[in-house]
Picture 1 (tube, rainbow, N blue to C red):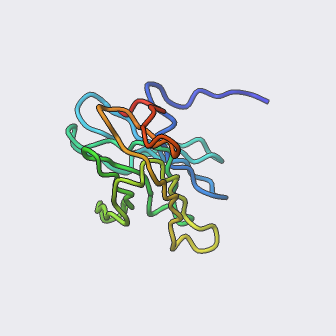
Picture 2: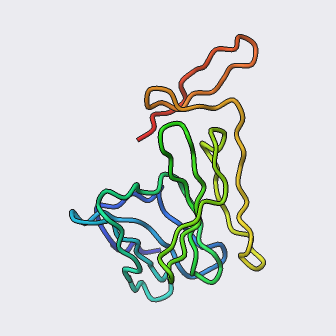
Length: 150
């Protein structure tokens, strides 16, 4: 097995793998704006498919790409509200498909058959407090920190 250098200065956990597909999408900040890039595994060809403004909120979790490669799903949060979004790479439009304080760790995944549905994990008793993701402990009613939000 051989390792091949593909790109640098990127964060893989904010990427969008394609279920049973040949493409891997990821975001990269180039110093001026955000790019969404597509890597083709069979050819190792890289393509920038979209530019987003520098002040655009970058995606926050390990998302997914539809089977056709046109849509990507991920998470964007504002204050204490978590928004699971689908971005249309052709139209350059984003749509929130579900939103609320309980979608802090959604693992959005396109269905593997047609890619028309996005499965979203619903977390209960989870909030963002002072930049930390916290979970309510059922016995005491208190919250304990589990991770640092960006």
